[in-house]
Length: 130
Image 1 (cartoon, rainbow, N blue to C red):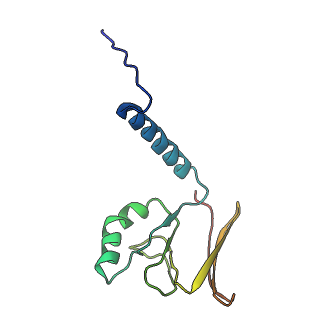
Image 2: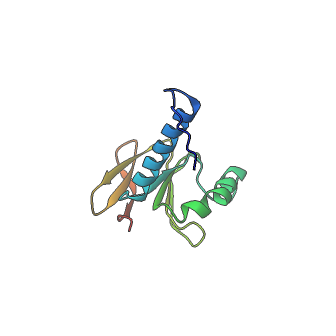
Image 3: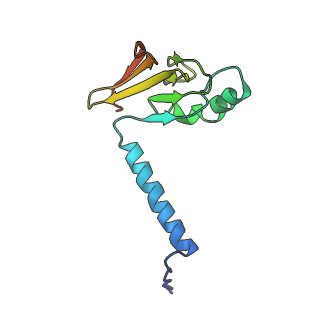
């Protein structure tokens, strides 16, 4: 069997691709072993506007198997969309007038939503992924 050795120059396309693959492998490993799996997406999955429907159609089938909670915005109003049969993770939709403060421990992740005056308006807690 003939084997050809190839030396990669630093900065060459194959070397960059190799680094990209190593980076992606590290990200995948970190995500798979993360205590909490949280997605951030500007547009929340929901019925209604075509953007929400696109997120729901294209991403929710994958995310249903991968995450515990999604942080979103876009709608300029606050709501927490509880997990359902179709979207199996809660979605926190933050307004432009609220602040989300997250606290994460080994036993729970706590998302508290405050208005601009500092009043607690909503809260969501999740436990570590299995």
